[in-house]
Image (cartoon, rainbow, N blue to C red; front, side, top):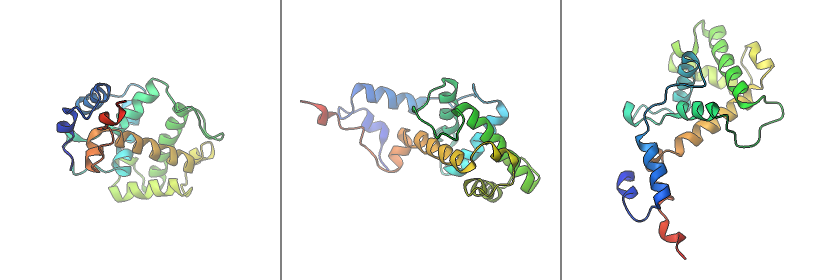
Length: 179
């Protein structure tokens, strides 16, 4: 695995890149601002199933749910969405509600109380449009799952620890930018 902290101290990294990546490395886990505490716990549980980080200590876990909460708090978007999807804030609240209701209909418990195998089963059903909950009549489950997974992956791999995990050092190319 790449020693990301050592690379950040070299002249291979521009100062703005070093600043951004160092902030990400040192950022505390976010407290929810957009989501309620229950919604945030649910989102964290979902993100833990989409991108398990069981091999990391709590201090080194990438705060995927925190990144989503931050974006929605600031009401930022990437500038597009599927026609059949509501605005991102509404989509997340409807989608989280749908996942939790699906868990309760199938297993009689909220998503966060399920075993990891049961959680995976709920998420696979949502992804495959095979979820029994009526919440999905107003929100396309497969599109929500696609958007959630894409944002989870984006948040994860924009973090220096995840980049180190795959030995990605594309940010250390300052010499290539000189004229």
